[in-house]
Length: 389
Image 1 (spheres, one colour):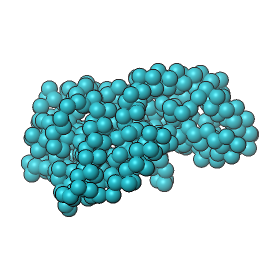
Image 2 (cartoon, rainbow, N blue to C red):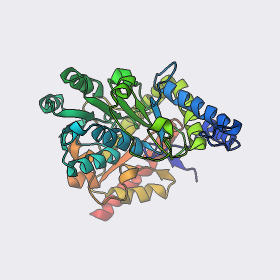
Image 3 (cartoon, helix red, strand yellow):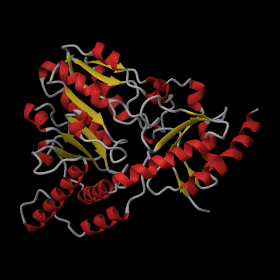
Image 4 (cartoon, rainbow, N blue to C red):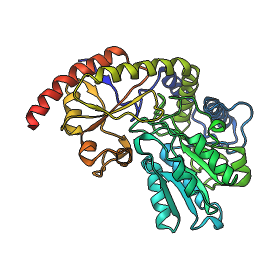
């Protein structure tokens, strides 16, 4: 039985380029911090990979020290950006932070921790997948020191107008630190820190056909000059002092290879995935389901839909038996028993959320995969609705 993987927002298959680069890196066992020849060999490979990831964000030329920090994942990068900014300067204690009501757990959990420590967090509405800029304007006051908003929602595919939001914040106060979790938008749409007016940008390897366990945080030269954030993981001072711990060289090399390959094929991949998304929507619309389409711009790879009185977990198991793999939301929150905050913010009822599934496309998917999905989904809906009734 052919396996059809449509859960690419959870993770992606490792690319051949990443695999090859990682296998070659396994032969280079020196510590990048060591001063001898083997250490220098490892260090040079580390910096080559750093340049590759930086280039995929549109950065060219010499990087400033700390401009791209490797971490263990997107969540760690989010924590470094948010907690590192909050605790960088004593005067920020108790200040206001602005975010959205539909952030990834890596951001939202950090926000809740800061609330417990006396910081004020204002969450801007993203109903129907659209960022409420009027609410944002009202929330911007002289106590705001950080604004953190995701680029693409990982459950609905909604693309938030981060560029306008960050420009508004900078117009209010150029010293406000702007951070975006770009994990789901990275190499799925065209973005750059400069175009987003972002001081800090979170990206991750395993969403772009790189390995799990590697992420990165971009920091603008201005943020570094102002010392806007401080490390949250202390130790030997690796990564220019921003993230201690011996670097995961093999994973980082895989990240660099995947980033380079993804950036080179970005235009082709965008066109192809947009066409595949539109084809998928059209074929799904013939079924008795409700497509949860964002009212604004949408990423080319994520489709969320609500089933007719069928719990999402039930449908996941039914499709898995046919070798088709989707999800009912964020993999990072799959063990939580609470309702999806992203879908709640989108405007779905609790009953609708319990019956919603996510299809997320990858560069390896084809129209034949979608035909197989629909061919499996249609009889499964008819069978499961009959059982439910």
